[in-house]
Image (tube, rainbow, N blue to C red; front, side, top):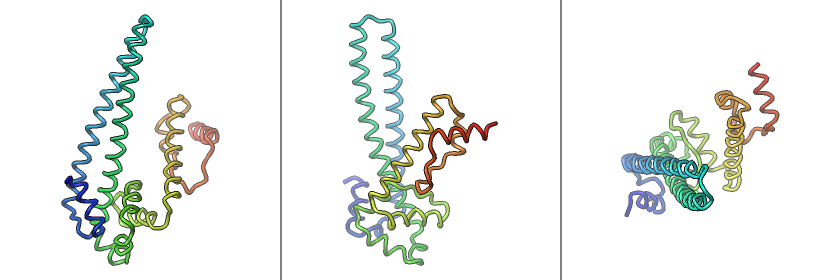
Length: 212
């Protein structure tokens, strides 16, 4: 049985209580290694896809058809790799967040939060801790993240994640379109889902005004 399955098994039998910091640190290292490997594999495939595309420039139609099939094959492999990356990333977030929770075990017990964590359904705990990031630097900021686990329904949380993702993709599109500098977008990007969303055009106008 893998360490990951052991961790999930322990949580299902006795949430967090029996997990050790050493086990979680080891699992983080293992998952980080997998993430790094998949990223390298995706980069290699991306280079291959670009090279195949270049080979088709100026080629005859038959050659282009053959290269197109190869590119599609590479693209499919990249998508499968990306799915693996997403799985490992969720596992890493879950494991890393559990590690942070364990490190704050004493403080959480003192404020009565530990019982809430122990009593939450294992499946729900896994979903929540896989989709948030606890920085582990300040206890107050960690508590803010943990409060989301207990105060938000899954559908509400998914909506926040989608909103954050949309803002990031909109920002990338602005930079890629040459409309604004990347550093300026990052400095002014607000990923807080609770704030009123700003229209793309309004954001662009504000950034241009600030750059004058």
